[in-house]
Amino acid sequence: MLKAMLTNPLQDWELDDILSETGWEDQVYVAGAGKSLEEAGLVSVEEFTSKTVILGSEGKRSSIEGLLESRLWDWIKEQDEDRRSMKDLMSSEFDRSETGPGVGILKSMGVEIESGNLVFTEENEIEEEINKRSQFIQSLSEGPCDSEDLDEQMLRHFSSRSGLIEVEENVSRIWKLTEEGANVDLSELSEVEMIGELTPEMLQNDSWKGSSFKPFDVTAPAPVPSGGRRHPMQALIERIRSVFLEMGFSEIEGDYVQSAGWNMDALYIPQSHPARTMQDTFYLENPSSVEVEPRFLDLWEKVHEHGHDTGSRGWGGSFDHEESQKALLRTHTTVNTVRHIAENPENPSRVFGIGRVFRQETIDRTHMPEFHQIEGIIHEPDASLPMLISTLKKFYAKMGYPDVRVRPAYFPYTEPSAEVDILWRGEWLELGGSGIFRPEVTEPLGTEWPVCAWGMGLERLAMLILGLDDIRQLYQPDLDRLGKMPLL
Image (cartoon, rainbow, N blue to C red):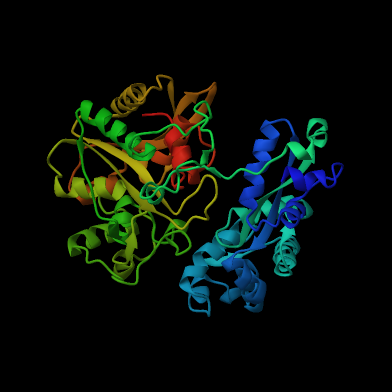
């Protein structure tokens, strides 16, 4: 390589130039030889990094068929105002796997859902944003583009969506002879074949004898070996579990697949609530329904329609038993605690659960369609709000956060309700909700005792403890990053 560069000492040598002059075919030779020459002070190396953006598999499809939000928007505009409902959309030509994420994207652009209908006010702004996104995808369909030539906002947006674009990082180098390298006497250079690594095959014969061996630098940096360890999320779950068990609580579990009745109706969430629509909840086709005991359906019907004997006036309207038996993936772990109360209405209990829940969320740095919740209740005759607050403060103190405050809040199934904040690096951060279950929740379950209840997102707590700003980092198979996270 040095001989080749000495043919033109003043040239800035690029990779292709060196490969051509030396006759090599593998760029690894250039990188290795160039590094050795640099260490000897004969060559200087400049590195340039660039990022090239290309369409991913979903992006290529979108460049032909159109972006999901563009196709959905075209469908909305073609419909009369009274035909823009989620029900109409679900029976349209769109695949069920597209409607939830697609509506989520449109909601972020200004489309709202009111009484199950898709409505909007800023039509021009939505049109402009969709056209801008479509033009961005079309510009990439013509071939790879340098990231610096692209709109930064569009680049950020599509990087957060799966399969639309791929960013490739490229490193190019230029080699230059230093003054010392340019003055090397060609007659002093000789080519020596050196062995860099002894293989088992070499040792089976005498071919290695008399050869020169490349020196091994024992002071060179080497990867630090690391042993096995728990995944940070699993370690945090075990830590939380040990704290609750230490406080005298018992752990409960439940199935991922639940009926809408136990997941929603039992918590006095009206059947017209937006959280029950298909763009927020994963409903199942197999099974499409889960049988619920008729006595609970009857009780929920009375409570929802007129309050039954709870002292409430209910939500009014009519209660649909079929809607209550639709099968879904649970949207919270509270379904486990209400079922526990229904199975043990006359037994005092202090229980907690840690489990996965599922919601149709657009994936970004703070949202995932699958995440974990921590849930707990105190079900006994003397349960009270002061007991709830002291329990939460004790839990967070054991977790390492002694500064806790509780603020009034609103949740459909608790009264009074409260949000829990912890002091984190000088700022108050909200971590979960809590309260006393309303009579509309507890009395159909067979108990008149007060129930202290609370729930919090596990990933939010994990992001604080691990110092992360993107929830996706918890689930990426990056062993180097995971290995550098603190032990919990």
